Amino acid sequence: MFCCLYKWVDTGRDQMKLYLFESNTCVAAILAFTAGILGCGSNNAIEDGSDTNQHDPEEALTYVEVEGGEYPYCTEPEASVDPDGDGWGQQVISQEEETCVVEMGDMDPNAPTVEKLGVAENLVNDNAAETTRAVYSYLKSVFGKQVLSGQQDLTWKDSTDMFQRVVNDTGLAPAIMGYDFMNYTVADGQGWSGLMQTGEAIAHWELGGLVTFNWHWRDPSGETLEFYTESTGFRIPMDGDQLDRESEAFAQMEADVDRIAQELKALQDADVPVLWRPLHEASGGWFWWGATRDDSVQPADAQIALWKYLYDRLTNHHELNNLIWVWNGASADWYPGDRYVDIIGEDIYGDAQDYGSKLPKFNEAVEYPDSEDKMVALTENGTIPHPDNIKEDGAWWLYFVTWNDGDSEEGVTNSSNFWTGEYYNEDAHKVEVYNHELVITLDELPEFYSEN
Image (cartoon, rainbow, N blue to C red; front, side):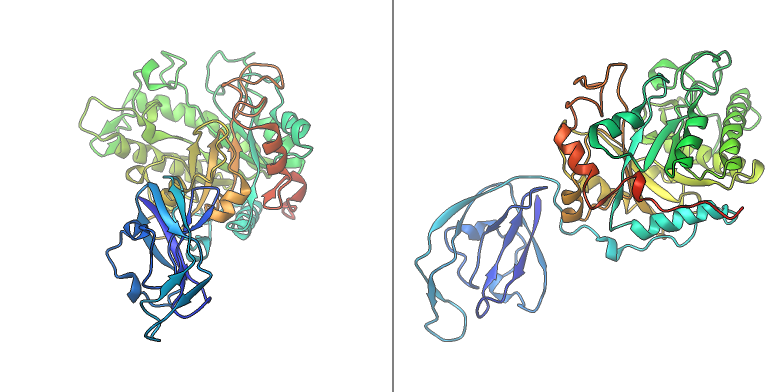
């Protein structure tokens, strides 16, 4: 079903227009008007089972559902006659028939608007650093009004500068840069690319930008260098519904966590708040931290246990107070609870050059929290939603982070390049997005430095 809305308009006694919105483009078509006369066969579009004549004109918005397909509708009449003088059963004069094509799509007017959403007042870490709290307060202030621009760095090739590629194509710089601890736990990783991520993040912060980190966590056992489920047999060690803290696998995981804590500590020492996004895309099952298991433990329960452990180890043991916890598990069953999450993230790639708002996933994500409302971000994307569609649909992503390019030269169009070239985002679209009044770029960020 495609959810649409109609609104009573003050154009005459009990006259109404049913506006149908096609996803993303919001092309309005008049399906029915003048109470009691839907005419032209358009009555078959009404699926809510109610008597159209009985709707209260004082009701600002009412929602109905229509099937996808073609519906006749009538143009607005030149005049109408009311034989009984009671506003009902009017006869329409000079009305022509048109056809409205209803397409299935993203639009969902029942979606909660940002005005209806609350946002958790404080970070989940009561001891969060002053600068980190300042960043969170800023994020709250722009949520539902503007969207921060972001770009993921290319972890596996240090010589590729994704920041500069964005600047070259748009004339503006991303407010947020995304980095990855992917190669920091490799025992013999010296000489690998991706070991400059911490320093690059500090440099971006010193430019006035914000940073986010994810972690493609390679097999903690060291038996492989993989993180994909299909390439490693490593699984979260569980003892019933708890982590098996006596197992060798747990010791291996903890060693990796402590190694990454060193990098996060370096960022904290530089007063850099981090939008911290570990265990991303867990519910997809393609990473070992979300993989199916041979025991009776549900993968979601194992991931929740690991998330809570990460929070405790980094926050309480390592006393890292510069982290804003971004949970990106992408399913309500995998949500670890409001006490452990500051922001909810969704990773959406979709079809090339589809600039829709991604409203269905936004609506799904805002429902994950148990009691506190959380801001929702587009933590990875292929195509960038057009800001006009975001505003029109009410899909107010806090920020977007376009994924990086493959190993190719700047400007090459192919499916492995999410920024450069025009496979996913046309050049004109990139320029329009970065120069749009609803999009925040690096030059528009305030200063967050603490007095210390």
